[in-house]
Length: 335
Image (cartoon, rainbow, N blue to C red; front, side, top):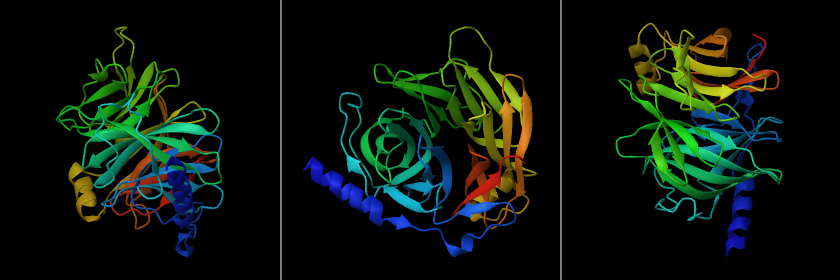
């Protein structure tokens, strides 16, 4: 039976494929990948030409976007296998695909082209969903393996893998949110010193010592120590509402987000896709030195409504967005 599920999963991954669309013609130096649904967050699959895309829309989905030809392949909910790891995720109620609304994503690199994907999920439950990602074939596939249901009253936003098999996630609250960690042994706990208004995106340093958090309300990138060493959080102002954050291959943190004269302009953009006066941004940040270099600064338009993530890929920065955005914009990284 398990072998049959694997065959069906592979076939579905191949069949549910969306080629690049003709209306994705470049605008100057900006290129696009279309056929997506609200690509809120992005993460690279190691040693491959694929990028995982979190489709934060009513009928939520996870797609793969090809760096090679711009094609899009849907891998969840359709096409994914299921194998509940009850030893690690015993408290998870099971594989629930209805009411799936994905948000932030993170990937833990593994060996032999097998990796672990973490996805913040709203909808039928508030949780981090966990997948085995098999990138050994021409198009990677997903197998659901478990979840960690959020504590009562927590609104998850973004997630990052940590050394030791756990992960950290942000609890977004505009008045005061915080960062939580989850481990297979102890479950959920609050990270000391992490309380701040509107914590949004999050990414860990490779050694797990530092957490970099997007301060949406404070318009800053926050560096937070995971060690109990008394180091106070450090805020680096960037001048826009920081959404997702990503580590670049150049060692910098790429903070992406948006801005408006007033927060109400962003709320209107989200609620009605009327994004007049909104601008989208990506900044390259050296959190230790406090240096900020703007990479993307673009007014909202029909192609990119509300930017949420900036991912360095080669000599490009890939920008995803929501509020009616249905594509990824590929900007030159040298701007």
